[in-house]
Image 1 (cartoon, rainbow, N blue to C red):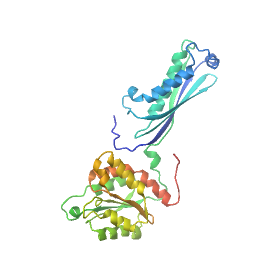
Image 2: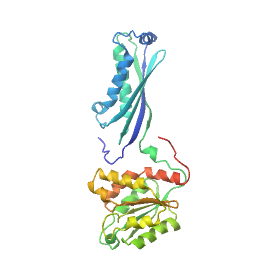
Image 3: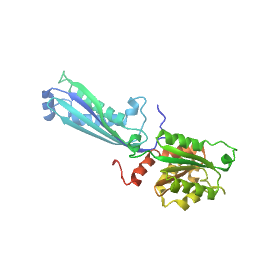
Length: 306
């Protein structure tokens, strides 16, 4: 079973289809409600719902998940029954297997209820028609490649007493998303120096994204939030809220972070805590969805509606 503990919850949807080939006489009996075992469509609908809800008990590597909706529909042709199953869940992993399982079990239930009447019945296909809500829905950005900087605020790292891990982790994550990191720097926890560096990134280099790490706690030298608030023109509270909420589910101390996110001109700033684990969680919480904001800054709006 894959580890999905680092994923965020999103609305996941999937639609699957199963096709059962039957004789025209069987279709006629269904329409006249003369199948000996009862109405096969009603029973198959219940079976599909049960199958979707219990997929993890049938397919070994499927995660148990909270299914929010299962919709089942049938189309009767001259010599076939098409079953469509839609599944929705707000969770960390997709629901395509739930939709496929529901459609498959509906087809098997129809087969079981009518097998004494039709020796030529055959399940001729089960396929996934669509799925949405995964990472690919939030990674699309248009236009030029984004340019970013990573700034580490730490007295001990800048003095050579400790090695930086958090800043390098951010650099690698951004590169994995095809974001160009044009500057990586380590400076002390000095408010004036932080402000000067941040203004340079926004006003001189005109970067798209600046992610900082360190200086977001409650210590006397934790100056990053104050420095950021002096230069940003608009705050993006949802980003810092998402980072704290994600971290809080994993570490109770995450609520003490004073991380800030905001915009100056066309540059987005996000401050993350200094620890490697906190940075990992912060990046998991906001990436790749944060990259969609650059489409909005360019006046391109939302690329797709959920």
